[in-house]
Image (cartoon, rainbow, N blue to C red):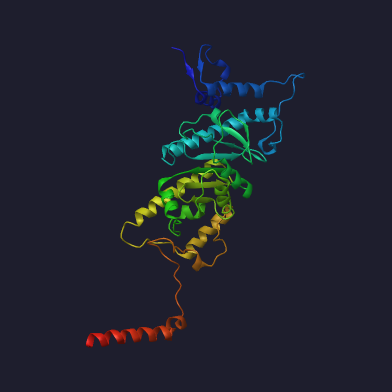
Length: 347
């Protein structure tokens, strides 16, 4: 029986230092394995003096205005192939955790000054292949790839344009988090350290998915928030590090929402950390370069969960003056009504 060689087999051989030229002559290569060997051969082969020089620009210098030939070489380079594999891996993890259904969800990575790599439309995130990926400019024009880019890429691109630090974005529909989005309730704060350090959540109003209006409403929030609940839709997150980090924010939010929903069913008010304790976590968050609108707020404003029912609002002890103050007119009205009721009862 002929041996079948996959991309994973080749990557394992490369990591172990095995000679990729020693493959059996009758071995059957999967399409992604053939692409990997071809890209590796092109990268290592000396350039002929008569052949036009191929572009080897790093990602940060590639632009949408580069020539089609340069863009095609870049899109098929080993560097971009690794990112394509990462998109497939994260997509599969989202699908396995039931964060997406059907062909829902999408991912994007900024790979140049004004270009991004993204997932295709109408393909399940659990079964994507590297050759399915698309390259687009920041206006959504597709520059490379055989499949059509995701219809919701405009939202990802608007995030990247509004937030220059955004290296990667992830969008999916995790059930517990999306439940909060449907209810229009922001998850309460001051409960779990990981959520406080790595996430900053806000809600964007509903608009039709894939429209510029939806993208704008989300982008308006990304200066101070890295995770956005999209009303009646799902969640989108961005990272200033990498795609893995953008996906981590989904896992953290979904686990947090699931935990607090369980806590709400236990029949007791949820216990929260103190404002000074949260202040310590916000200092860590700020040192990591993660945005949060609570940076610089007073301690009594940090744990305000007014939207959550049951919840814990910021407790401020009223002053003696406030406690003793009353409304004379309101008291007189209440007294008059009470007198009338008592008179009728006696009569």
